[in-house]
Image (cartoon, rainbow, N blue to C red; front, side, top):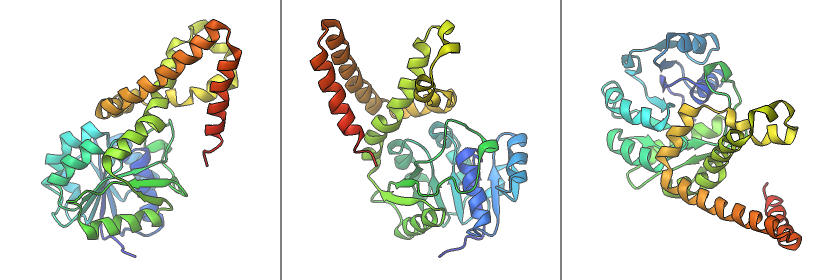
Length: 276
């Protein structure tokens, strides 16, 4: 098991901060630093013992042997050139973004030891204030290597996620994006659209089922518009598939066709029962 001498986090929010807490608590890294835009967030990260030092200057990443890119995809892409100046070529660099194809392609060209990752953990709450140790316990973490991925870096990243409590799953970046378009990105878009469609006067009397279904609409719009735009082709297809099913439901209800409606519901019920 490798112990990193200095780990850096670019974007110490919910995911980055939670990684930092466990890197320190489990002694996976001797020192943890973070670079971010806001002094307040960096101060909270230090108070929560997610980092030893936080700075708005990317020079804080100099000498790191592990760097976690924990900002939204478009932010990572914009900042990569600047960060590259301070990150050694032999440093292992990984990201934790929710879409993979674009970022893996671009970051693999910039960082020689880059490994794409997406831990399937977190919540609709965002920011370092919500970071906590143990966030990744028993969660799947999808790792998306490509031909250019350094074998040693890949092995180290797989071991790192195991030590963080996650279960590594190897997957092609494009397959990851197709799958997540249905299992994560579509549900979030649906939740935003559903609560947007609700007449405001009904909010106060909405039942628990509505609150449960729209919980993820409490997620950050700034994060989710980034995810939608960086996976828009796959998301467009998943929205199309869902719209087709909704049209079938609507048609059955309009016709008063209870048998057709029940067939749709029974098929969905059986499929839902297969979720582990």
